[in-house]
Length: 163
Image (cartoon, rainbow, N blue to C red; front, side, top):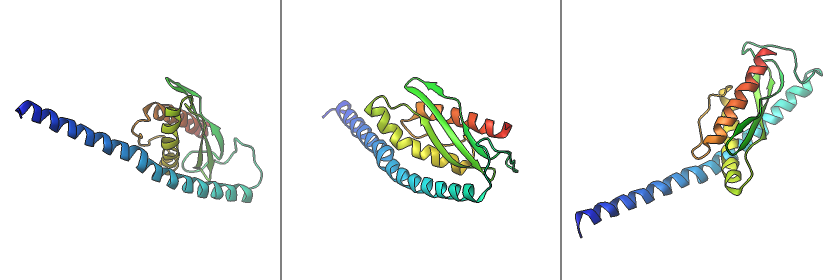
């Protein structure tokens, strides 16, 4: 066997291993994060509901400001056009903190986009609530959604600061 064939074989095996690892991290680890994000989202929604019911009735664009500079209320970011479709995010602020992030629009025209976004969006939503900002980590394979998500999220946060 020549050195060239050996090198080619080693590179092929290395590439196959890299692809397998990437697939594992993207799909299997994201499933775990999705489950965790769903549980966190449920508890966040419950906490937000409790806060809302204990507060006196107020309008959606609310009035109280806190040390974080965010005013309580619900804010929808701009709809951001991406090459695969529009992305729009809505945040709920309670106690001056982002308590819930909802995705109003996202690319879902084909099975591939739907599958990627089913994995990435729960992670993005969870990280946005944890970070209390648009400074979140990108999920591999969901770059376009990430860009639209973070831009729309930042716009909603800016609205919450300006209100």
